[in-house]
Amino acid sequence: MSEQLWNEIKSKYRLGELIHGTVEHHAPFGIFVSLDDETVRGLVQITDFVDSGDMTPEMYPDIGSPIGAVVVGYTEDDRNQIWLSVKPSVLQKALVQLKVPATSDRSLPAA
Image 1 (cartoon, rainbow, N blue to C red):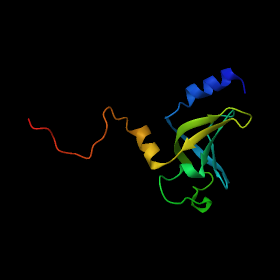
Image 2 (cartoon, one colour; image 1 turned 90 degrees about the vertical axis):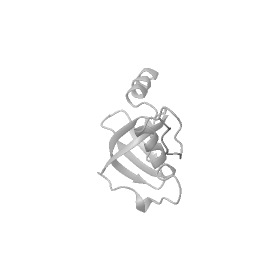
Image 3 (tube, one colour; image 1 turned 45 degrees about the vertical axis):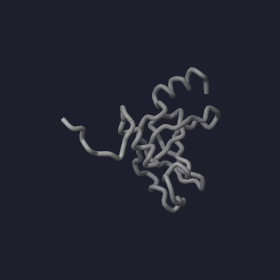
């Protein structure tokens, strides 16, 4: 794939952006995701499902099911893949854009 085409793909599927697709195929190392784009497909590696604990292929979403995931990288070779993550912590960062660091102190300042 040409550098120009990769630049177009990177602008369409930006790092940190939440995108939607359909589970296309299961593999021992992760799942492939159809992105309604003939030139690339998504890959969620088994390590990109959960923040902690064990993930096994038996826990993968069903083939054909919709999936939302965050773009975390690209494979710019003949595989033409967009790396995706569905870890809760990664999804939260994509959905909630904080302007200040979150704190555990929920008290309101005195008026």
